[in-house]
Amino acid sequence: MLFVNPLTDTEKRTLENAYKYHPLSATRIRAHCILLSDQEYQLKEISSICNMCRQAVSNAIHNWESMGFVGLLDEHRSGRPQKTTQEQKDELINRVQESPRSLKRVINEFSEAHKIELSLNTLKKICKAARMSWKRIRKSLKEKRNQEDFNVSKSLINQLIDSYSKGDINLCYFDESGFSLTPSVPYAWQKLCEQIEVCSTKSKNLNVLGFIDRNCNLESFVFTDSITTDVVIACFDDFCESIDKTTVVLVDNAPTHTSDKFDQKTIEWCKKGLIVIPLSKYSPELNIIEILWRKIKYEWMPFSAYKSFESLKDSLLNILAGVGKEYSIKFG
Image 1 (cartoon, rainbow, N blue to C red):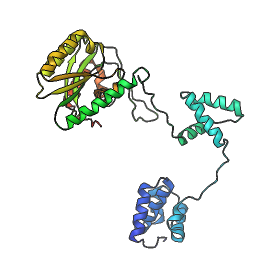
Image 2 (image 1 turned 180 degrees about the horizontal axis):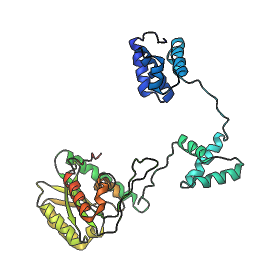
Image 3 (image 1 turned 180 degrees about the vertical axis):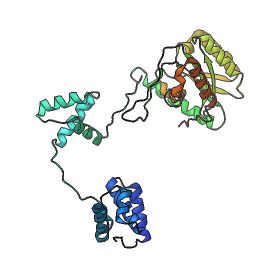
Image 4 (image 1 turned 120 degrees about the vertical axis):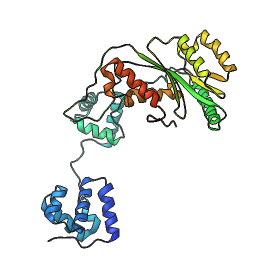
């Protein structure tokens, strides 16, 4: 019978940490073998548990006895000579940044220029080594906005957040969003041989208008009709009746928030303690309720909601009622 010599407490802790946290799977498995051998598991049993051949288990034990933990590590291997120099890798990264959606085009252009054949996997490894990854492209309005106005709005919001934290005011963010039977398709973990399918149908919209504060307290209004200035004003009138201290509401520059009729009502609301402040144009990231809409559409809305308009409505109302409870967001 082949067993390791009894392990000390320090050796056990070292091996347990290696088994749990070492970045290389081979080292984790060998550490597991030594721990099992210390518990007097036989080679055949360890081989079955770790899915290794008997000789590999025996080698791991002998290496541990002769070299200690170093014996569980793989020796450095030089590997095949690399096809590309560091300068060529930098050139490839620059080409990828110029054509980020087509690696095949990058390979073809690089091969024509240097007469070097590269595989798609090789180029992906070079990209990953440069801390690049394949991910969704983000829509942005930064090019359209006035940066000075954006900075002023951001500074004002920070001051309002400070007053809100001290309890001097209530601070809310207002916006609208629409939901229909055409789903926002999220990423999801799926088996390679299978694919999750979500029903998609054209339907009328469920339009949600909401006020949310930084503690994720939400007051929402749901309509199937179009959102007009009169509808927005009615929601603000209703919300105004519920406030118990000076309340600041931040709004974007949608037409319903900038109309003359809405501007005239802001004076009336101000007298009741409700102050409406517009954000700088093209600055959706300043309105934290946008995070709520994304969470509902891409994370919280169940796939079963898209079976019918009634199921969509029920699911949406359940989520809106649970915001701040089972559906919570921690705003930074």
